[in-house]
Length: 359
Image (cartoon, rainbow, N blue to C red; front, side, top):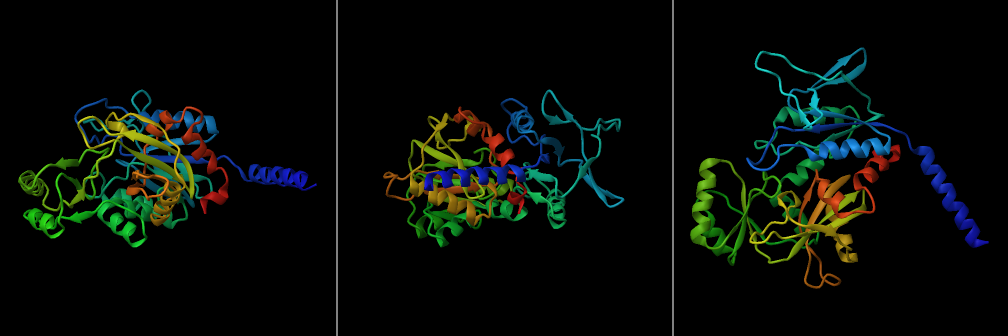
């Protein structure tokens, strides 16, 4: 009967999928000593989370720090040499002043069996350097699967460019305008009929919400822009319309499929909702419009695994959400804590056991 044929087909599909699944190894790159702030715990919670998840998924995991890492080729094979890690803190062991350096055993890199996760790639001129980016691009050129790809990382790096990308592709996004020089604030406000308060942020270079400021008047905006431009001559500042909300949403999109979504409550007396800054998080059910636009935003950035952030519309069922940005290296701590019934990181790691998902 038709029902029986359907069950047989599903079992066959499941069998084919299982046949394609093979263990692999991950090289997870960090910038483990790059602290954005001078408060809070100096540790690496994702180091421990990824250790736990990879062990549960049956995948071999190697940690590498961008600082001090180098790639060597010998006898037709590729090896990564990288600092050792402190298993208590999850941080790379820095060389001592007397010259002593602790390296891990060389990690063999095989394009058909090694997935590269450059988690600490950051922003050029702020939290990374060109050599780190070059090493990931070299691996890509040699056929390695990297998540994110250099292209995805680049597309996600600029909030202003991503805003224009959304506009061109019919995604709703807050009004956003660049400040082109230190005394440009008044012109931007008047020419675009901007109402205060506004959001002032760096188009690139902020970390975990640090670098986002709510400004109440032109009197405050103008000197703030001048001060930031004095401290960093080439800083790329943008003004964004302020939309008052109680929460925003982070969606994890894996190769066109939504894995999970969490509601992040705006911090009291603040305009930010980053879990890393202490915002409360919980699971949330998305509307069809929110799912559709989140997947589209991820596709625009050509992302295999990204975090899409949006502000919900007043009428979530009928109105598009305001897409804020796509994070090419989304954190997993918040999304894990908001999903009690499953491990998102384990699902991600198991997904790539199927080599079809590497293409």
